[in-house]
Amino acid sequence: MRIIVFGGTGWLGHNIVLQLLDAGHDVTICSRGQKKLFLDEVAKVKTVTADKKDEAAVREIFKTPYDAVVDSVPALESIGHIRKYAGNISRYIHCSSTGGYAPLPFVPCDETAPYGGFEKTSGWAAKAVYDNEVMRLFHEEGFPATVIRPCYITGPGMLPMDNQGGRRKDYIADIIAEKTLDVPDNGLSLLQPIHVKDLAHSFALALQTPRSTGQIYNICLSHAVTLVRYHEITAAALGKKAHLNFIPLEDMVKKYAGKIHETGLRFLATHMCFTIEKAVRDLGYKPHCTPEEAISETARWAAEQN
Image (cartoon, rainbow, N blue to C red):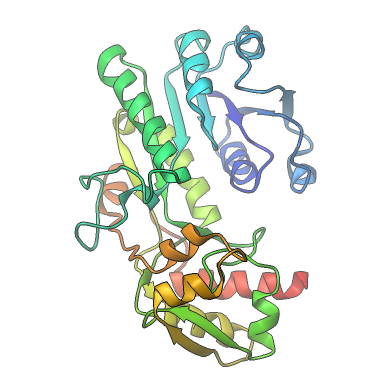
């Protein structure tokens, strides 16, 4: 299958490219040429430098026929351009997020839950627009769309989630120094990771599974852990002990006002817990590791970087 991957030089994107190459596909990367970190890993892959929001550029790209399109970071403009110029592609798959389900109406949550965005001004709200648009195109025009919604992405290549809802560089240093970390509320909110390699593999599985067309899949590891457990696992991976200080969420928001992204902190205190039954059934999806293993691996990788 001839596939073009938009955003194929990013953290997730380059992992998708490597998975598709391993599966024997003919892969081309399209990127704006701004992300350099993972270029060496895909240096031998055919690459087109273009902005997918530029209609003329997309029109030029699809003068070369492709069987499928993968977009790791979709935009409303690019969806329209791809629909207009990609010809008779057999598959279109883009990456979304489980964040739009929050606050979860039930646990574990599944793909039947309402999806609108954690906060109306957040990036999750925009993802709801993108997902709705490709599903509308599928139902009205037969556009062969599939949406992948990952949980918190982890694994080598990106810093781990910190205690403030971001990915600050000194989080691992604080763990190693056994500093006391503020944690919102009682630390019992749920966090369910997805290893970046398993997420990338889910795209390859969806591409080879015709029944995935017109479907949305939540992609996570097997189960969720509490924030307390998350920090404990991270510390234990480095031979340390987690020291946690529990603060009511609103007090923590005030304490860190102007220093962190408030939406990230509020989201951290919100349950994220999903079933992957649909992906297992339809795609044959099977994570290669447990959440505990993924958290530990990421902690060790981040420590090595520092």
